[in-house]
Amino acid sequence: MFLAFALITLLGALGMLLQKNIIVAGLFMVASFFGVAGLFVLLGNPVAAALQIIVYTGAILVLVLFVIMMLNSHEEEPAETSRPIQRWVSVVLSLALAAGAVKLVLASKGLQQLAEKGAPVPQGVTLQGVGAVLFANHLLGFEVAGLMLLAAMVGAVALTKRNL
Amino acid sequence: MDTLASLLHTSPALAWMVVKIVIVFSAVMLLASVWTWVERRGSAMIQDRIGPNRAALFGRIRIIGLAQLLADGIKFFFKEDLEPTDVNKGLFWLAPFLAFVPAMMGFAVIPFGRDFVSGGATYHLSVLDPGNGMGMLYPMAIGGLAVYGVLVAAWSSNNKWSILGGMRASAAMVSYEIGMSLAVVSIFMTTGGYDPAEIISAQGSLPWHWNVVPQFLGFIVFFTCMFAETNRLPFDFAEGESEIVAGFNTEYGSMKFSLLALAEYAHLMTASALVVTLFFGGWQVPFVAHPSVGLSILSFVVKLLFFAWVFVWIRWTLPRFRYDQMMRLGWKAMLPMSMVNLVVHAWLMSHGR
Image 1 (spheres, rainbow over the protein chains, first blue to last red):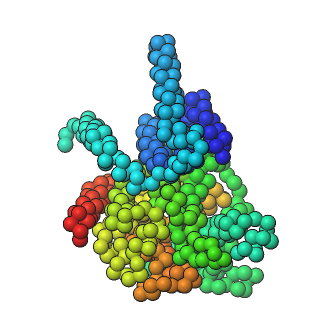
Image 2 (cartoon, chains in turn orange, red; image 1 turned 30 degrees about the vertical axis):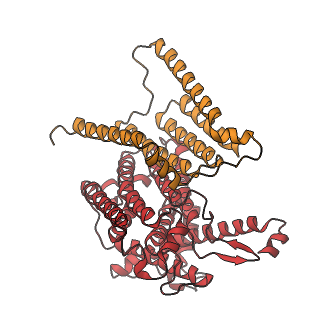
Image 3 (cartoon, rainbow over the protein chains, first blue to last red; image 1 turned 30 degrees about the horizontal axis):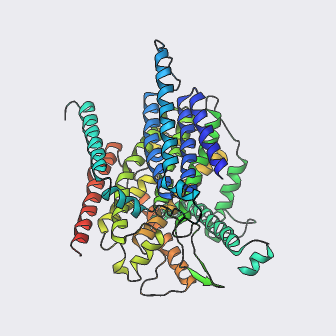
């Protein structure tokens, strides 16, 4: 099961990178997100899987594909001037991201509990649990994120609608 | 169930799972195909016509035109499978499946009858057992995927009308999803849980305790959004025959078209199952506190068919909205209404009713 979902994720990501047609690339990205959702289910976190599908595949990517179709640009456009520094910066940033992710996973409580014998098995996450944690421990972050989204929304409306 | 499982050399749980999947999917498929006929007969009834009643088995057995289903199916299978020259082949073939699979999958989490105990084990009448952690998030997630079928069909056809239809439909589906989700969230809130089994048992058997009475506003919003989600009239902007030929399925023919059309009806069945589960007590039988299993399934099916009929009824009663009117309705009427619903119920809950 794990191998299947991991393969879906990786092949989807690879297909997205290699595909020249951007709509097909977007659909590969959907497949990749599906693989990630499957991995979440295997990790005993169905809420994260459902949210992954609702938010990323159900909303964000639909909007991205929608915009691509509206602009009707089917092919990847070559960059006007190639800047090799961009490539290096992206390599460094993605390596940093990967290192951070691995460190987070290795430091997680669930993994340490798996190493000890007889420790309680980490329980599946429920929506109630997520809500309680969000509003009890991470209230500030939650409010800041909400405010930022609101600001982005107001900005988008202000930019597109000149005469309100 | 145990004897059946031992005959097949599997565990009872596995055998029961297979039985459930077969029952649910074949029932939804059958209902979806029957509903193509109900739609045609219903439209005929509403418009004072007769409708399809000529098809007959062996030229004799008409069964009020139900043989039309078989005739349609056979016709679609034997039609030439046209593929326009400039389509994106892979996606053109993939699109009907992308439309059909989510429409069928959404049903998996819905309990269609009460649990029963047999041989010391409890059996749940839903494909995914309650307590799976996904609960009502699952049909919402799957419902969000239904956009891809329309979008991919529209884009891969390489036809301006198709792309117009697909874009209008995807914009509509995404905007109505917000109002729908907020209506569902207020149900999660009053129930205190998000598992369909919890939502149903919290509603009880008295009709005035069902969610439709305290959350009538939420019901209106949810039901309207379901029309947009299933792409049916008065919101069928994916097709819009009078404006953009046939929208996203202009280039489709034979069984591929049939699959797209069936996906719409399967989606309709899932949508009415959701309405029944969330607002009309699911399998609860009115005034019967502890119904038998058969009675609870019957109650669910009756409610389901009623709402599926309401979908047909409204389709042939209301004219199609204009696109901007629909967007205005979605953003300026449905979204505020479901927010009011949410806030009012939050306020009521904080004051202990």
